[in-house]
Image (cartoon, rainbow, N blue to C red):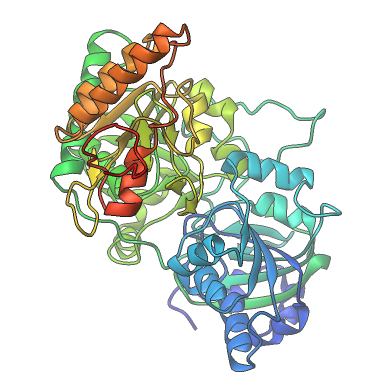
Length: 528
């Protein structure tokens, strides 16, 4: 028995108790080539017992590469599941976002076929049946807190694509997690119909509720109930450093300016913050800042959101997942359950990342790219334009539809040989996830560039001046002036680029370990 109750107390539809089994008993349901859907989102609320048992089975029986699956999940899940599956060659296709060194390695080596997609689009497109030949999936594996008498599922720390999965999967395996308190009552589940029957969602505030706390499930599709006591292996993020603190400071000053100008109310507008250490630090800056009675409408709640609540600045938060760190995030949350529980609403990905509430509420979107160029095109996914990191995530859902669209990044990153070897402000992004049309503000520790109302050449000057590191500012200025002169003379100068030189910094990085080029000349050795 767990300190949080028994399996029998969590499964209130008693007929399902006849389907209780071990994770090992579930292995019989899995065959090579199957399409699988899991619960989970940035790693929170994902199944653990059955995926781990499958990995153990493959490893024990030397079945690497012989039992492979197509894996569809709302976003990333714990490394002990998908990343381990990647090491055992158990993944053929993976949609639409992932984390882990081994799964990224498999994708970039061509062993895993990954499809990258806006998360909000993926949720609805999965429901439309776009990703498999018949629109169906063989097995869904879902982690829940409880099952009601009428087979409603109370989820755990995320909603992900469970609403869609339960309608699309031929077989369903439920993991009931009794190793933590029940999250029953935290979720707001609203299932959207397909066009032309789709109705509006009347979410008019971050804490509006438009659905029910449960995901309905057909009990006849449930083939197994497995008890789990494993908690999420959430990621820890770096503490705030001088760079992230400076970025947060620039954003605080900008918000104060917008309030003074009357473009933001004193309690701002609902905030969205992406995943990662800088995003975590920016939220930490807001937690210490002067703004009060704030609300959050986002896709991921990270550790500093608890600081936000504790400081009294944050009134409520809506998200797709509670993505806290394994230590100290979740223990802190559980120790202060009464303080946080009633202030948080967890929603399906198809709602949390839907353009309709994002635009209606006027969300302030803040996300971190790999790099951005002098015209405000941003790359969030592919290092060097080719190497996948994690995926696009939900940043585009918010950056296209928000009230203010902000991207923040360090101005430089180190290489093995040069502490300033990579500039995050480049002449031309080698891959573009977010175009100049979607971004309003770019921020580095060097400064903040407000791009609203600026034509491309004016944007370039402001971005170089405000955001580029001093080591790279003259290099980028030389490039811009050279490209502008040449393109304007030829009558093609709206957004000047010289494509024989635009990626010379990246070439120099590949060959010499730094983007600090000596000149912009074209020679046989472009990287002189």
